[in-house]
Length: 218
Length: 218
DNA sequence: GCTTTTTGATACAATTTAGATACATTTTCC
DNA sequence: GGAAAATGTATCTAAATTGTATCAAAAAGC
Image (cartoon, rainbow over all chains, first blue to last red; front, side, top):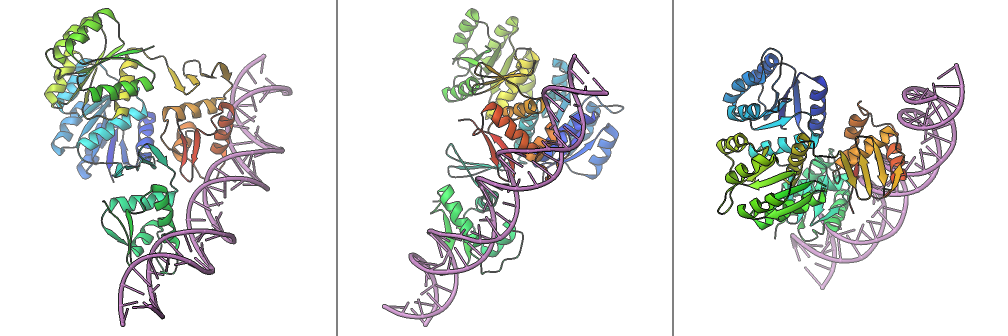
């Protein structure tokens, strides 16, 4: 899981960010001052730091110098908006710069961009003309939205993540249903059937006799 | 209406931007070279210029010098991604910097941020025939005013701001009610119900089984 | 080709979740 | 303080999802 450290002394903003990033599937830690930030950075590795510049005692610029050697990308969050501040932040090595007040969608966009730049994430899976968005649990084929149920969605994600790999029935069952598999039920087959129908992947989702299923490229 | 000039020589990118900005309610003009840009800027006033740096003949940096005296904000769009380029652009006075390939949502977010910074935005959201005025908290459908309660208004704003994105029940609850969500209450459902009735968006506000709700276009 | 085993298809039952309704509680505004 | 509006709760109904039973079709082994 992707870990993000939020260094922000205003609890309201810190919470807003944390809640939204958590919803988006990131693991968040929050601190409200530079010293705590330095301490937690000593002991933990983060994929990204969101850093307020105006902090009591140790400010963001100092902290950035401390983070730099760890190669962790940093996005500045700040009320300061002058050109000098922005250039200073970028020159010092911040990956991006967000000015308060900001929209949550913008924050998420920038977080995603930076993480992608660092190859930390891809919240979108694709298979041929099918696109699966893991963040908001939507699936599209071409430009129509597929109406998948939660179980079907999970099943499709598992297949796409293991494209061209045969998945054992037991493994599928135990992953999606989180319970042991006793081979006397048609439940999995039925879900495969429904998924084939909805996605149109009748041919691509191959059944492997006695073993399980495999999603195949053509 | 807010006018945006797109200076970009790759037609595909230019069209992509134009289509999405138009959809977002902006008026767009496109040119594919620096000279045309200079000419159209002579005769018209724009609220924002999206400027590709790599242009034939007159490049983006030169053009930026030309635009600067008009005080029109500029967002650079470029394939160049080095720190120096970014700092150069910002030092020269660009408001922001987008590196290709970019996500359309990110572009929109940055456009909005820059416009807001320049107070160009009329804080109005629209969805189909519904117009939401954030300043005086009024909502109209066609030319009739909708009588929404505060909660309903916030809910609608959240849905419209996240159109075509599935919002998790928990996230909605935590955003609008600012408290944690315990899944044993029908409160959110009830507000959705009332909103559907008042706005007539019965079909557009889709419930996503076990997940949450999504406002859909079409 | 025939039998056995496994998967696919169909119908339908059980379960879970969302919608509808009525009404209680809280807040707002005179 | 009290009426009106807004919000929340309880409860029931409807709908969507998930699972089971059954049988037909397909695959594998002989």
